[in-house]
Length: 381
Image (cartoon, rainbow, N blue to C red; front, side, top):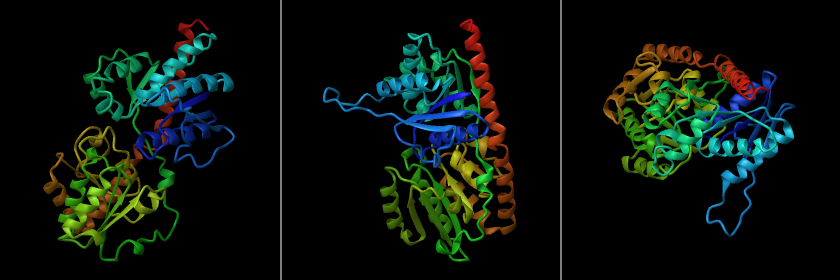
């Protein structure tokens, strides 16, 4: 198949999943066209059947905000025609599904029908889409898609609760390429981060309010009072500076490392002992899955799709949102008991196996094939 993938080209979970999906599909013989405003961060190499097409947004003084949706829909029309793209897989309802629908209608003028598969990742539903201003557009975009998927059962349930959806929503979970987490390097440079007697705790996110960054700092503050430890904070976002300030106020700045965005997640997780994800909500929890694939147990909240990923008392521990005290106790319990920690690490890797990319990508292929067949039959082609 010739598949067009539309996504955000950033460090966020949706962009990572979309890119990894495209890479795996290309290995399975499909031709993949990434269509977005920058080359996706995980798209390091372009191959014989992997292409990237940049969406340029011309600046017009007439517009206070430049119309990305218009530029994207026009680019989609051009790329479908030029490369005979058979199906569009768009990640996020708005603006991507919305722009894809406009492109679909423009292509019909030339008797070209390209089906749209829309994957819902979370923010487009729980934050942006539920705003009264955007709700009609999100509802319309989902209902006008030819197929819809959600990355967790929790997200599917939220979507059906918040919107008047007439389309079937298929749950196709996020995934991970486990081969990338079979660390081949013998020295992951742990000594650069911590002393031998210190445990390493890690958090990776976009440092937004929903991630509850102060909870992470306070959990670590409680842990380091009882166990020698270091905290690795990976990512960028509006709550990074307040977090650094809180570390100074608590007197633990020398024990916390802020990396910023990084392409070396595998090395950072290589020497981690525990991963913190106390989020207000998560549609899935991809960063937790990456940690588990590296054998790092997860201390998390029990909200959204996280319980579908992190199994309580098996791959880590779940607590109510905001329960810093219990999360701290669970972290200390795991880190103090080497036998327990070793068991949790093995369990974390076993849990991650359920989400191996080779188990999930065939589900997308089946959806593509069914969608194409249904559309062709309905159009009598």
